[in-house]
Length: 426
Image: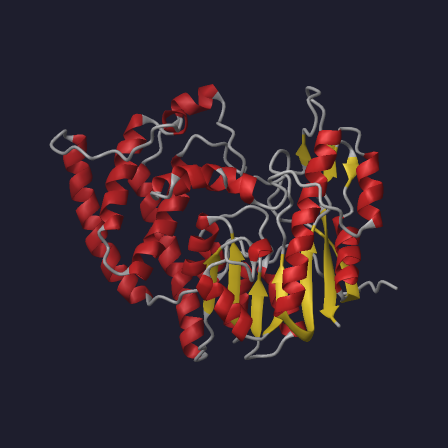
């Protein structure tokens, strides 16, 4: 029998951007208040927490702040970059010293660039429609900033400034603000849009140093020694040769006491396109273009699979979806997710908890009961259901309405509520 919690899990009005949580936006991230409550309730200080779909690292930040070592896994290189930076305490005084030198050098060279006394080398953007999203002056100024960032010797400090650069890229691009998918702002707005690129970067750096300062101060004052390690990998490949060797070794040797995660939604068409969100940041940062363009394809459900899995609820749901192509995509997502659940069961200690925070998306007007399907799959693997918690989503930035069909103007509600599934390994 499912238990329902009477606690307030909505956290309406809560500050979700404190400390390093506010360094960079990321689609549909778990709010830190939920991560903190689950970590404190189902583990102890000194335990090890795993987030197998870690996104920008919010769960790992909370694990660190509560004295737990943690591991994060994500297939998206931008997510891994953000997670590394957000969980690495950096002394703000050192960042400020670096920033003062950097700011002066960039300003001087921008002056030379604007007076045509300096030419900057533009990265290879072939096979991308870069000019659709960035005006020529933006491309030149961003390239100049990136050149200076590349010269920072310390890897951790360089990555910190890369995160500031990434958020600047999004703010000065032609993407519609407040959305995570790649839609350009209306043409009349785009023509008038002329942000001061370096001023935006300056604001992002100043704000980010302040956020990192809060994190560094808390960790230092409380003598926190917890560490987070992030692996750019596919959780479904855990314990196989396709998973990074270091990650296989550490996850095999360490006792993972708790899993806290928010799995991807498995629908880049209409819900959350993590690859689209990350695309231009990664291209600007110099990541491989082909790999960048394949992020959504390599995510859960990105490739069609026909393997049978043990879920009656899933079978009944698939029968209701009229579009058989979309039904196959939904099934493929759960085939991949089931593979992940099997690996997670293996890595978790006996009696360890696995907490899944997820919403039920809509496909062709049919609500996909992901919560019920995960419960069924978990039970078939050996998990015991402990509790199901329901919450409204007051601030999670995902589209409330989408167009999942080819019918012009047709919109349906996507996700406005979340479910928190608490499982325990038998």
